[in-house]
Length: 211
Image (cartoon, rainbow, N blue to C red; front, side):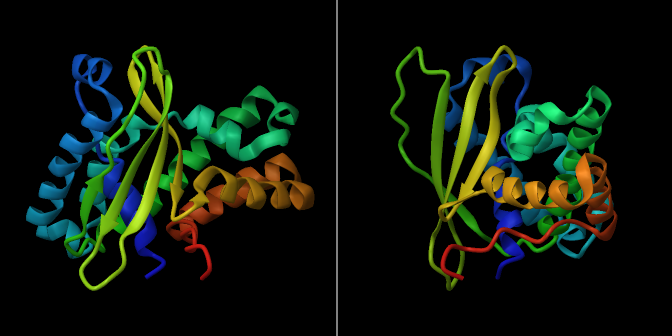
Protein backbone atom coordinates (compact mmCIF):
# COMPACT_ATOMS: atom_id res chain seq x y z
CA UNK A 1 0.00 0.00 0.00
CA UNK A 2 2.66 2.52 0.98
CA UNK A 3 4.70 2.15 -2.20
CA UNK A 4 1.69 3.36 -4.22
CA UNK A 5 1.91 6.88 -2.81
CA UNK A 6 4.59 7.92 -5.26
CA UNK A 7 2.55 6.30 -8.00
CA UNK A 8 -0.24 8.70 -7.07
CA UNK A 9 2.20 11.59 -7.31
CA UNK A 10 3.34 10.44 -10.71
CA UNK A 11 -0.21 10.10 -11.99
CA UNK A 12 -1.46 13.47 -10.92
CA UNK A 13 1.69 15.45 -11.59
CA UNK A 14 1.69 14.33 -15.20
CA UNK A 15 0.06 17.50 -16.51
CA UNK A 16 2.54 18.64 -19.12
CA UNK A 17 1.67 21.06 -21.92
CA UNK A 18 3.22 23.30 -24.55
CA UNK A 19 4.54 26.73 -23.49
CA UNK A 20 1.50 28.73 -24.64
CA UNK A 21 -1.00 26.35 -23.13
CA UNK A 22 0.88 26.04 -19.84
CA UNK A 23 1.24 29.81 -19.45
CA UNK A 24 -2.40 30.61 -20.20
CA UNK A 25 -4.26 27.74 -18.56
CA UNK A 26 -5.43 27.94 -14.91
CA UNK A 27 -3.57 25.41 -12.73
CA UNK A 28 -6.59 23.24 -11.91
CA UNK A 29 -7.76 23.04 -15.52
CA UNK A 30 -4.27 22.21 -16.69
CA UNK A 31 -4.00 19.47 -14.09
CA UNK A 32 -7.43 17.98 -14.71
CA UNK A 33 -7.35 17.79 -18.49
CA UNK A 34 -3.84 16.54 -19.03
CA UNK A 35 -3.76 14.10 -16.12
CA UNK A 36 -6.22 12.10 -18.17
CA UNK A 37 -3.62 11.94 -20.93
CA UNK A 38 -1.12 10.29 -18.58
CA UNK A 39 -3.74 7.88 -17.25
CA UNK A 40 -4.61 6.90 -20.81
CA UNK A 41 -0.94 6.22 -21.60
CA UNK A 42 -0.57 4.02 -18.53
CA UNK A 43 -3.73 2.07 -19.31
CA UNK A 44 -2.55 1.36 -22.85
CA UNK A 45 1.16 0.77 -22.22
CA UNK A 46 1.53 -2.82 -21.05
CA UNK A 47 5.32 -2.56 -21.10
CA UNK A 48 5.36 0.10 -18.37
CA UNK A 49 2.88 -1.85 -16.26
CA UNK A 50 5.01 -5.00 -16.69
CA UNK A 51 8.09 -3.23 -15.32
CA UNK A 52 9.82 -1.56 -18.28
CA UNK A 53 11.72 1.14 -16.36
CA UNK A 54 13.30 2.67 -19.47
CA UNK A 55 9.85 3.54 -20.84
CA UNK A 56 8.75 4.72 -17.42
CA UNK A 57 11.79 7.05 -17.28
CA UNK A 58 10.81 8.49 -20.66
CA UNK A 59 7.26 9.15 -19.48
CA UNK A 60 8.46 10.80 -16.27
CA UNK A 61 10.93 13.01 -18.14
CA UNK A 62 8.36 14.07 -20.73
CA UNK A 63 5.20 14.45 -18.69
CA UNK A 64 6.12 15.02 -15.04
CA UNK A 65 9.42 16.79 -14.52
CA UNK A 66 8.65 19.92 -16.58
CA UNK A 67 6.02 20.83 -14.00
CA UNK A 68 8.34 20.85 -10.97
CA UNK A 69 10.49 23.72 -9.76
CA UNK A 70 13.27 21.51 -8.42
CA UNK A 71 15.40 24.44 -7.34
CA UNK A 72 12.69 25.81 -5.07
CA UNK A 73 11.63 22.35 -3.95
CA UNK A 74 15.19 21.40 -2.97
CA UNK A 75 15.78 24.72 -1.22
CA UNK A 76 12.63 24.26 0.87
CA UNK A 77 13.52 20.66 1.68
CA UNK A 78 17.09 21.50 2.73
CA UNK A 79 15.69 24.39 4.80
CA UNK A 80 18.04 26.27 7.13
CA UNK A 81 21.04 24.37 5.81
CA UNK A 82 20.59 25.74 2.27
CA UNK A 83 22.52 29.03 2.89
CA UNK A 84 25.41 27.00 4.31
CA UNK A 85 25.91 25.12 1.04
CA UNK A 86 28.28 26.37 -1.62
CA UNK A 87 27.01 27.08 -5.14
CA UNK A 88 28.49 23.77 -6.29
CA UNK A 89 26.85 21.89 -3.42
CA UNK A 90 23.48 23.53 -4.14
CA UNK A 91 23.62 22.40 -7.76
CA UNK A 92 24.58 18.89 -6.67
CA UNK A 93 21.68 18.80 -4.17
CA UNK A 94 19.18 19.82 -6.85
CA UNK A 95 20.58 17.28 -9.30
CA UNK A 96 20.59 14.39 -6.84
CA UNK A 97 17.12 15.21 -5.46
CA UNK A 98 15.78 15.33 -9.01
CA UNK A 99 17.46 12.01 -9.87
CA UNK A 100 16.02 10.42 -6.75
CA UNK A 101 12.47 11.48 -7.59
CA UNK A 102 12.84 10.38 -11.23
CA UNK A 103 13.78 6.86 -10.15
CA UNK A 104 11.13 6.74 -7.44
CA UNK A 105 8.34 7.91 -9.76
CA UNK A 106 9.45 5.66 -12.60
CA UNK A 107 9.42 2.57 -10.40
CA UNK A 108 6.01 3.51 -9.03
CA UNK A 109 4.49 3.95 -12.49
CA UNK A 110 4.98 0.24 -13.09
CA UNK A 111 2.54 -0.42 -10.23
CA UNK A 112 -0.41 1.30 -11.95
CA UNK A 113 -3.67 -0.55 -11.28
CA UNK A 114 -6.52 1.59 -12.65
CA UNK A 115 -6.54 4.39 -10.08
CA UNK A 116 -8.62 7.45 -10.98
CA UNK A 117 -8.25 11.12 -10.07
CA UNK A 118 -10.91 13.61 -9.00
CA UNK A 119 -10.04 17.31 -8.77
CA UNK A 120 -11.82 19.70 -6.42
CA UNK A 121 -13.12 23.10 -7.55
CA UNK A 122 -10.47 25.82 -7.26
CA UNK A 123 -11.34 29.33 -6.13
CA UNK A 124 -8.67 31.85 -7.08
CA UNK A 125 -8.44 35.58 -7.76
CA UNK A 126 -7.08 36.85 -11.10
CA UNK A 127 -3.96 38.19 -9.40
CA UNK A 128 -3.21 35.04 -7.37
CA UNK A 129 0.28 33.67 -8.00
CA UNK A 130 0.34 30.90 -5.37
CA UNK A 131 -2.49 28.37 -5.07
CA UNK A 132 -3.32 24.93 -3.75
CA UNK A 133 -4.90 22.51 -6.21
CA UNK A 134 -6.79 19.81 -4.34
CA UNK A 135 -7.58 16.33 -5.60
CA UNK A 136 -8.44 12.82 -4.49
CA UNK A 137 -7.03 9.54 -5.71
CA UNK A 138 -9.64 6.82 -5.93
CA UNK A 139 -8.57 3.21 -6.08
CA UNK A 140 -10.60 0.00 -6.32
CA UNK A 141 -11.41 -1.35 -2.86
CA UNK A 142 -9.70 1.51 -0.99
CA UNK A 143 -10.49 4.82 0.67
CA UNK A 144 -9.99 8.04 -1.34
CA UNK A 145 -6.65 9.67 -0.63
CA UNK A 146 -6.48 13.50 -0.64
CA UNK A 147 -3.52 15.06 -2.44
CA UNK A 148 -2.89 18.82 -2.49
CA UNK A 149 -0.47 20.56 -4.85
CA UNK A 150 1.23 23.80 -3.86
CA UNK A 151 1.83 25.67 -7.10
CA UNK A 152 3.07 29.12 -8.02
CA UNK A 153 2.95 31.08 -11.25
CA UNK A 154 6.13 31.68 -13.22
CA UNK A 155 6.83 33.16 -16.64
CA UNK A 156 6.82 29.56 -17.90
CA UNK A 157 3.46 28.68 -16.36
CA UNK A 158 2.41 27.11 -13.08
CA UNK A 159 5.00 24.99 -11.26
CA UNK A 160 4.68 22.54 -8.37
CA UNK A 161 6.91 23.17 -5.35
CA UNK A 162 5.27 20.90 -2.76
CA UNK A 163 2.80 18.03 -2.58
CA UNK A 164 0.77 17.07 0.49
CA UNK A 165 -0.48 13.48 0.62
CA UNK A 166 -3.17 12.74 3.19
CA UNK A 167 -1.92 15.63 5.32
CA UNK A 168 1.80 14.82 4.95
CA UNK A 169 3.92 17.39 3.07
CA UNK A 170 6.59 16.00 0.75
CA UNK A 171 8.88 18.98 1.42
CA UNK A 172 8.37 18.89 5.19
CA UNK A 173 8.94 15.14 5.29
CA UNK A 174 12.22 15.45 3.40
CA UNK A 175 13.27 18.49 5.44
CA UNK A 176 13.31 16.46 8.65
CA UNK A 177 15.25 13.65 6.98
CA UNK A 178 17.72 16.01 5.29
CA UNK A 179 18.37 17.96 8.51
CA UNK A 180 19.19 14.74 10.36
CA UNK A 181 21.61 13.66 7.63
CA UNK A 182 23.34 17.06 7.55
CA UNK A 183 23.80 16.98 11.33
CA UNK A 184 25.49 13.61 11.09
CA UNK A 185 27.36 13.83 7.79
CA UNK A 186 27.35 17.43 6.57
CA UNK A 187 26.16 18.80 3.21
CA UNK A 188 28.43 16.48 1.23
CA UNK A 189 27.08 13.57 3.24
CA UNK A 190 23.52 14.52 2.25
CA UNK A 191 24.53 14.68 -1.41
CA UNK A 192 26.08 11.22 -1.17
CA UNK A 193 23.04 9.83 0.66
CA UNK A 194 20.71 11.09 -2.07
CA UNK A 195 22.96 9.62 -4.75
CA UNK A 196 23.06 6.27 -2.94
CA UNK A 197 19.27 6.19 -2.53
CA UNK A 198 18.83 6.98 -6.20
CA UNK A 199 21.24 4.21 -7.18
CA UNK A 200 19.22 1.75 -5.07
CA UNK A 201 16.05 2.73 -6.94
CA UNK A 202 14.44 5.46 -4.85
CA UNK A 203 13.49 6.56 -1.38
CA UNK A 204 10.85 5.14 0.88
CA UNK A 205 7.37 6.55 0.17
CA UNK A 206 5.78 8.97 2.61
CA UNK A 207 3.53 7.02 4.99
CA UNK A 208 -0.09 7.91 5.51
CA UNK A 209 -0.83 9.88 8.62
CA UNK A 210 -1.73 7.54 11.45
CA UNK A 211 0.01 4.55 9.81
